[in-house]
Every structure is written in C-alpha cells, then in structure tokens.
Amino acid sequence: MAITFEEYCDADLSLIRDYYETTFSHYVPDLAERIFVVRDANWLVGVVRLRDEEDYYHLCGFRLLPHYQSLGLGSRLLQHACNDLLDKPVVCQALPFEKPFYLKAGFTDLPLHELDGPLFSLYDQQREQGYQIELLVRQAQAPAYN
Image 1 (cartoon, rainbow, N blue to C red):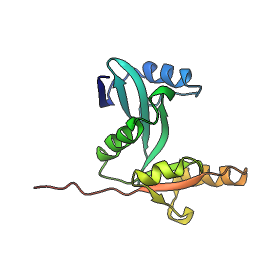
Image 2: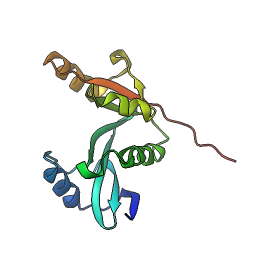
Image 3: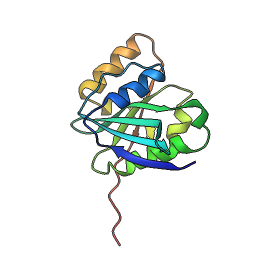
C-alpha cells in the first residue's frame, strides 16, 4: 500500500461527490468545506469534510471504504485533518457506537448549552426527532514551537 494523506484543494468537487455517492451517502458539493483525503496509490479511500463555522469547524462528513477500516487509517486521517486546523475547535455529532473512536482521537463531550449557531439548531431538531446523537469537541491546540 502506498498511503498518502493530504488536503484536497481542487475546486472541482465531482471526485468527492462521486466518492460519497459510491459509499451510499448523498453529497452536495460545498466550496466552504475543507476536505482531507487518504489515498492508496491514486485511489481515494477516505474523506473527512469540515465546514468552517464562525467559532468552530463542524466535522460534517467522514467516510472510509470498508476494506480500509480497522487499519488505523481513519484515525490517522482524522488526526491529519485536526492537526491542520489549530485555530478553532472541531465539533462533531457521533452515534453511540462511534463515540469511542472519537474519544480515542482526542474529542470530549460537548454540553449543548456551550454550542450556538446552525449546529445548535440542527442538533436540537435531531434530538426532538428522537435521534441518539452525541455532541463531541476536539479543542484547538496551540502549535508547539521549538
């Protein structure tokens, strides 16, 4: 395997859209997102999408092809993305079975009262509809200089 991690910087998001649609998720291309990918040689095998909100980044999409899961690639891709976003915290919504993965990656519980803006409204609406989603945050870290 020739694995590489990088930020996807092409304004043509058709590759990302096609990837999401092959993994059974609908995706509407959004130039306001920062996108990080993992490739095996030239094949796209994983994507993390983060929307830049006013006070935080919202992790709004994370997909890894099934046969690349349980190899540590998802963790490495998430770390790569978060390490590139040191200026603001990263907020995500996790299903109960996903929570241990995010906790291991440095996320912690985020009380709803500490959140505002569009993500608060979305989460509150999902909670009222009975979704069992938990809010998590990975705090921004100041870069270490030697």
